[in-house]
Amino acid sequence: MFAQHGLVMTPEARQRLTHDQTPDYYFYEEWVSYQETPLGVGVLAVSLGEIRRLLKGLNQEESLASRTRQV
Image 1 (cartoon, rainbow, N blue to C red):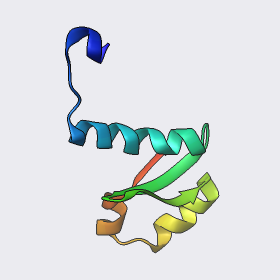
Image 2 (spheres, helix red, strand yellow; image 1 turned 90 degrees about the vertical axis):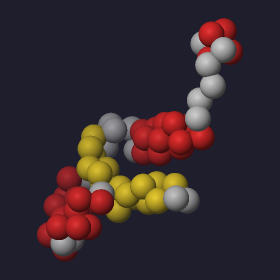
Image 3 (tube, rainbow, N blue to C red; image 1 turned 60 degrees about the vertical axis):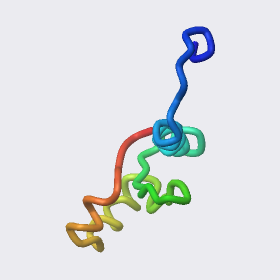
Image 4 (spheres, rainbow, N blue to C red; image 1 turned 60 degrees about the horizontal axis):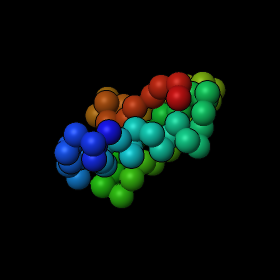
């Protein structure tokens, strides 16, 4: 589609797409909590039980810097 219409994906868009899809690839249909870093995605917890324990130990700033979702 990109080549057909002459579109070019910016490096920032490519990085966002890669960061968004990495948890999906490794943890399909699981609940995952992770942080995006310049080097990639850092997984903090997998499964609701691990995520609950993780969130109890995080302060507000750390909690806001992480993403939690079912992938």
